[in-house]
Figure 1 (cartoon, rainbow, N blue to C red):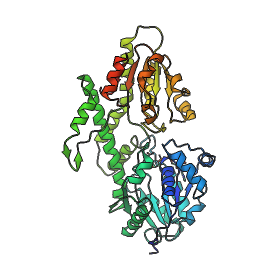
Figure 2 (figure 1 turned 90 degrees about the vertical axis):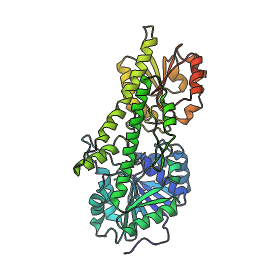
Figure 3 (figure 1 turned 180 degrees about the horizontal axis):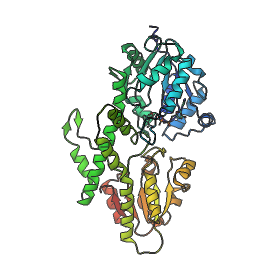
Figure 4 (figure 1 turned 120 degrees about the vertical axis):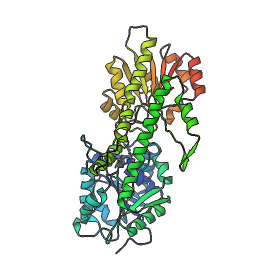
Length: 450
Ligand SMILES: NC(=O)c1ccc[n+]([C@@H]2O[C@H](COP(=O)([O-])OP(=O)(O)OC[C@H]3O[C@@H](n4cnc5c(N)ncnc54)[C@H](O)[C@@H]3O)[C@@H](O)[C@H]2O)c1
């Protein structure tokens, strides 16, 4: 086997420069690699080269700009750089279609391009989340179309990406990388790459399929655990108990290799991963005659949270209403979770739709989300400033609580909002002392399960 050499080749090509690919490209550049990012979206590449980073990840625009200015990080729509890279990392999108089936178009197209260009000695790392068996049954045959043999001429590994948006850059420096190789030599090459480039811990799996399943298991667990937290929250609300107090105490006993770890309830689960990956494993299991009944249950529980949150807002406003003008709701944070500007499958959208359907006037504000994208997704542009959004509001709905918001003293907004303004906490998890102070100032407060 003409295996990748023991000396780390620091020329890396990252294929697919979305959330994951651009964070990986920038991080590898920072770690000293010479990186070429390839993406078939010419607008994205033009934006990067014009100094604009569409991907709203904290720290990423600055890092991309530095990398691009250094000349050791370049971005392009062409695949030519593949030939001169020691390692190629694939991070294209792997969505599911409306029937729940894996939409392989992006991965297939990328592998067809790679199949024409790979050369002996290269390491090919696949990071996009896929149904188990995809690397062996779809990716490898496409790579081998050019005549090279995977596992002999080129090394192939599946290393699932497990970063969280909002803390992606830090996590890339610290999260252990799971590695599954086509064979032991492929896994060894991938392990050498991750240890040598990002210096992170590596967890070896014995097969491609095990590594593919790890990612889906992680997100199945997350979605399921959040569903538990959401149901617990709804129950706690019904008995007037603060769910955060219950969770903090419940999480104090050791179980397994850690503690009980109930996650936090919220306005809902969104983003491009947790809304898709549980369905991906459920479908893969069904194809093998195994029915994963917890998957649809957790998905239903989490999908019901935006309607629950909208109901909470409307019920409280109706209770304190004197009739007359439509309610004004200022939504602070429209992204799918804290500290990202990503609007994909944001649970804030169904909340806003339900409020509008009930006749409320809704103003939107999010310092991390792109203005044009907010207008496209929500049908109205965001308010230009916090002050514009909250003027005369009957309700401040805190639905994605970015770190930038934490600097706001909500008490100081008292004069700008309606007299008995309601604060609905969908993801800010305000501490008890802050809630008490806000109540003393005349605000009403409701949280999810609080
Ligand atoms: N976003 C996350 O937080 C996250 C976390 C962990 C894992 N993942 C997984 O990582 C993968 C990528 O996710 P993402 O959020 O970065 O997706 P994304 O949609 O933001 O990015 C995918 C990029 O690939 C590009 N692309 C599509 N076809 C291409 C081709 N043939 N050649 C080159 N580029 C191509 C697209 O233009 C796009 O820019 C997915 O499998 C996802 O499930 C995502």
